[in-house]
Length: 408
Image (cartoon, rainbow, N blue to C red):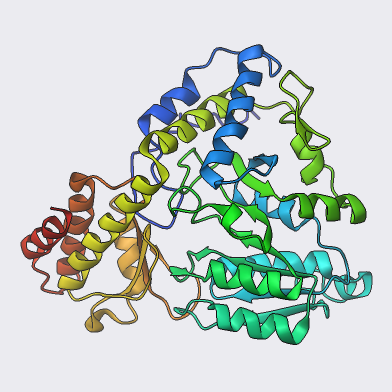
């Protein structure tokens, strides 16, 4: 019997107006498709990798030599960062949403003893992990971090900077200050903030490890490189305790980028078989970020978010988030309980917004790479049209006027 031959897969364009990934810029897509078929040691591929690590240091705002990209999505970068955590390590995890919750599970798997992991391999209850849960819709404050670190005196502490599960910005300075005060090494999930926030990580000396992703602030396709940056203190600790990983071992990963013994080796070194297409597109995405300027980019996002917030609230929604790339909101009261139906109806028309993945169910509307007036107007119109279809009398023209007033 012959195997079936499926028709060619054709995927239509969608407006990716969710927490991420967003719509990749055309010039980044062009960079992905235009390289010649090249060996991974071809000189231009190696040159691109050298320039990528230099651009990443500028975007992170750091002089950390161990700043590079881990092949894969943000989870790959986070796994590399958390590889320094060993069974029995005392670590405080701050959780205020879905993704910081997954970080916490990842750490429990790494910190669990053999007995704890065997007892519940999919959800180990590691005694050395202390979890501080902040309610959905609230930020982790410096006071919360200070109190927890003063009480538990952990070796490590970890937190998401921007939590896309609830759209909340957590207090990065308070976290760093508390880590520094109590001799704790801080680890930060910067998946949603890098490339959007006006951030210099060297301003936060209590934090020794940072991990981000390619598909949000960088807008470099979901599968290219997850940016990471590690201080010398982190690297010294890693050398001392090691990591039970080759693929996501930060020191070994750094060697793929010509970072050896804490120094840049500005010549070709053997590395994993990196894709020339991934190198070219990631390189172009980083160029775009730096062309726009970090402060100017952060200001554009803040202005666009404020305008979209005003427009959606004018149609009866209530925004509860404070991120500048994502609005998390409650629909008008008469649609309570219909959030997932509303999202599914939007997605059927290639207008891809998201629900929250934890209770209470809310709506998430993102503006990654959707900062132009025309793009924001399209979001407002399509959102308003769907409200009308669900029998909510939204004044779309007034909402668009409100958007434009704030953008003016």
